[in-house]
Image 1 (spheres, one colour):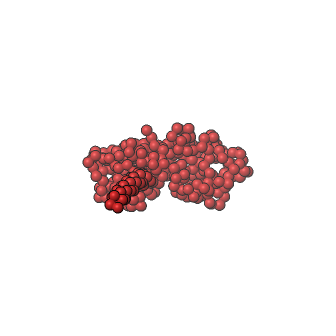
Image 2 (cartoon, rainbow, N blue to C red; image 1 turned 120 degrees about the vertical axis):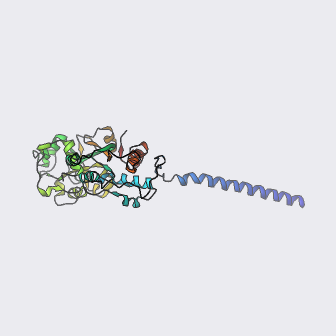
Length: 316
């Protein structure tokens, strides 16, 4: 009887040991999958410098760079994206943001190409900025989704915006007047149009109702407004494809010379209307100024990794 009791106790002990080992093994195998369900952004490596709410630079810039600005602030301060709004101001035109940097109202910009007016404003103030390309975007031409035209050539774009081509039938569409919208002269989109399309003095002067003062306004006149089926407009690719999905569903990005715009054709340069965007600070900032420390990090490999996670096309 005693021998049977001892064997029983040994068996129970072995069973508990095996059960415990299995439980431990299950817990260990679950931990990596739980921790890797969403990778955290890389920590900001700035040596001994520590960003705090008190010393964090006031950031502004072009609207299409706002997601990157939010990600930078959230990563540097270890806060949520919604809390990052208090440290950034991505409002107004690109030109007004460059001017605000000159005036000292911003410490750092994430901005698209500066306009001629912005360059003159800085020169008149004896201000020099330092800027580094951190990514690439593209100027895209858009129509209403119901427009049968899918492709446009560079020559046709110049013809339309110089007033020589006026009807969609000349592009293989319906016998309808083209309504070519333009942006306000101090906008980043208009600066890109002027630089990349290159009409200069041949750009036609549009009726006032065909000049749109905001990026969302341009999308609205091609997506929802009266006669939108005959409208033609332009914007930057990232803004439309990543920030305005509802408007993207109602519009169509035209291929240019048969090339569709995508992150891949922007990166390769195959799409014709590609341009860099920048991190920008005052050139006179000392090495230990918070804005320069942040600028250096944004331009580093870590900063570019963060931009890539936000679906921007980065530069090498």
